[in-house]
Amino acid sequence: MDEWEIVGRGRTADVYALPGDGARVLRRYRDGDDATREAELMTRLAHQGYPVPAVLRAEGPDLVMERLAGPSLLDALLTGAVEPEPAGALLAELLARLHALPGTPPAHLDLHPGNVLLTDRGPVVIDWQTAEEGHPAGLDHAMSALMLAEVAVSPAPYAPGARAGLTALLAATTTPVLPHLGPARTRRAANPCVTAEERAALGAAEALVRELAPVADADGAPAAR
Image (cartoon, helix red, strand yellow):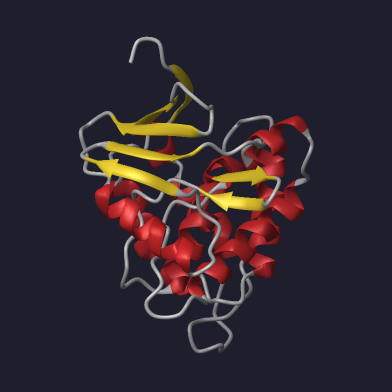
């Protein structure tokens, strides 16, 4: 593995370009987590027409997939190739498409700009490790909104862009988000990959989502700010 080129590094896994034709990557979990459940889910989503990388093999912590060409949505935002408003709307569209699938669609629960690749065939959603079935669509939307809000309330120079993207995401979301913010915050706080700074920002992030979200509760009735 020493000769393999590392092409990506996330909070839980490293991604290597496999030698040969340049068409495959290996995603390896650093903690030894089993990738087979994620592979099975991605394969099912691909059969249903949802944009995910093609899975070629999974064994233990290793997941071999097609290598996709194109920047992440996050990189496109940072370079100015994509504006925050259409990026937020794209996240809302990808979430809506996921939860409109037949059967019991999974909730991704970590859909942010870093987990969307902009390829020649369109946006592709990656990193399904946290995905689970049995959750309402509103929780998935609330998780994405909360992660954008964490950036929006931070001192980062791109915080205003994150706020604009969050506003666009909420405006394009037809699923009520406010009833699911509390569970989303609890889930986010319990994530061992979340930094202390991100955890400390959750209160302000939740408040911002409540400020910007359409004023409606789960039944569509007006809700107090």
